[in-house]
Every structure is written in C-alpha cells, then in structure tokens.
Image 1: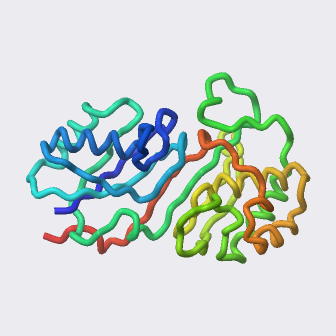
Image 2: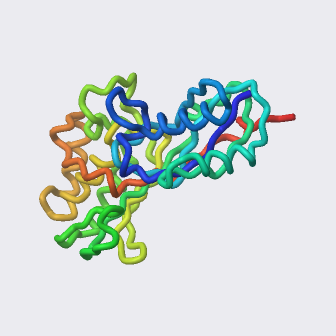
Length: 249
C-alpha cells in the first residue's frame, strides 16, 4: 500500500527537506521514525525540496509498506517519537501510483517581512529597516503572470529539464503588522521564491524600476535578478492534489 503523510515543520534546525550526506534533514528524521515504528526500512518521497532553514505549515510525502496498521495510531506514535519541530497531521491511503511530488497540482509559499524590530519574532520573519513601495512591488508581481521561463530566479547549476513554471498567484499584502508575499505556481525552481522576493525588495526600495523586471526575466541570468533573501522567513503553506489520488475501497 502507498500512504501519504501530511505534516508541518519548523526548518530552523534542518539543512532543508532532502537527505544530505553530512547534515540533518527533515526527510532523514521522518524516515528514521517511520522505520523504527513500522520495524522495517522506509523510504519517503516529499512533495518538494525546501531549502535549509525554510519552514512548512503544510507538506506532503509518500511511502510504501505492506504492513497493516491504524493510521490514527501511527499519527499519535509519530508525534510522540518525533522532535518538537516536526508534527504529523494525517496519514492516509492513496492509489498505488499516486506520487507526492509529481501529482501535486500547485504549491503555495508565503514570505514574511517584519516592518518593526521584534525581539520575539526575528527567527520567523525578515526584518526590513527601510520603507518599501508596496504598490510598485505589486505592480511588478503582475508582470510574473506574463512569463513562463524563470531561469533568472533559479539557483545556478540546477539539474532541471525545464525552467518553465506557471505562476497562478503573486501578491504583496499587509497581514497582522507584517508585509507578506504569497506566491502560487504549479512548480518552483530551486531558490526561486527567495530570488523573486529579493528582486521585488529592490524594486520596492527604488534600486531598480518596475519595467526592468521584463529584461531581468528575458535575460535568463541569475546575476541580473536581485539577491536571495534569507530562508528563515519562507513558509511552504499549501499543496493541492487531484481527488483521483485517494484510495478507493
């Protein structure tokens, strides 16, 4: 049987989602917990690869096992076994061919910017001392809908077949005293959201013009785009799947 895990994690202590040879990852911790509780080697496949320090309020992964177990009981045991910075919300059966990564219809991220120095929140948000022109940043965000190829925002030397992404939502808004950027797409390139945010901040600071974003995207050059903002203020917040992945009795 194939199962999906729905989880959340605080990424501060981890070198990203994916297993690393010399650093701890969320995937590694989950695999060890599942393997221990199910008493067999378990490999999991995540819906995406968040960078070091990036958080997820909603993440999915899948694993296979022939063992029978109570999904509710395994959720309880996993949460007792796992560290405080990883939480399991649900484990459920899916179709044998369902894939956490390839079947995802969309992914949504939120980047949080704090506009005031906050001694209790600096680990969760990116503090900006300077004033930002949010109207210009939203104007620039609308330009993203005109393009598919976002190589300029991708980490260099990334092994991908295409740099094309369909952006479905890109918006800056004030939420509870913070400035938040929400972006939704069918897929994201490595470092893409952090590079987009850094570029938008440069526009908000007046370092580059809104219209310059067209040439930045057309250049396909990472060096033309803005800096990569820190990962600690980035959150994977939502992943959508078709109903067809669910297991039918």
